[in-house]
Length: 358
Image (tube, rainbow, N blue to C red; front, side, top):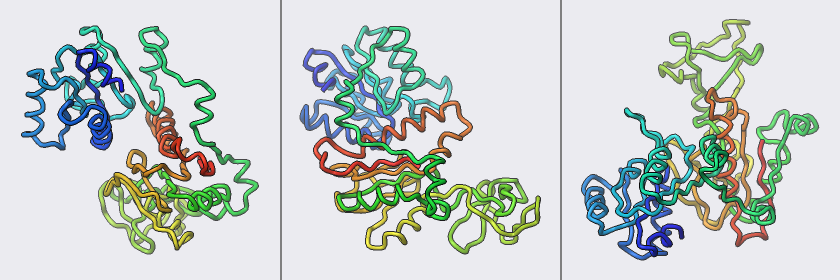
């Protein structure tokens, strides 16, 4: 709607999104709103021929609206009236090659030079976005508290006290509250389960003294591939079939972090009548149907559910917060916000709230 209003005023618009999936959704929405041929799409997936043809159309002024990924921040849009950026905390907005421009900074400069509107949105507020508001350069667009309560599903968290009272949580992957949310959600539609780590068991430790299992050659973390298979180093790829703890000499291992494939396997055994689908680095799903299913996904690879998810689970949140990164808190909050946005559309308020963080 912001792009349509800008075009109606006789000026151009530029929108930068983090990845091709987001561009595809924005492309479909703009086509439905503006019609065919009113905007250009600049992404690497389009191929050099189509991308160059689109760029020429923008350069010559035949098209005045552009959406695309990071490189689109330099699109030569004529009479620029709006620059917009979605999810400025996403790493893909930062160019890895010198001089390493960030899409947010480039669009801020273009907005100041062309004296046009600047629109920034995302699942959470980054430090840079908060600074723009704090200094008075930008104004926050915040929904009223009543709107937030009407749109956002109920969020329930499981803390240490809840786990101490839950006997099943001591041996099971999920506490009772999470299992109940999954069972209730599957009666109405798909359930999203977000796991911060891909693979089977990406981190293992000694079962006796909790010393992390390391490779003897490069000291990389040993990963469990499948049930009963040999360990493999996550750095050099060497297999380890005769591991023993260098601290206490024990031979038994325990999982420190459970990956997406292991989670999908356990959920499949717990709910044998429900299909389990995975979405991650190896294979990313774009959409899932409205039929009941368990969708296990890593952060950033969550498919869009037609009509929204009936429930959502965020597992091992401590693993996201514990990353050695200054933006670990921002990223964890953004992933939680993205999960909530995909959890329950406004049209399905009859579904039971079931959003659980474990």
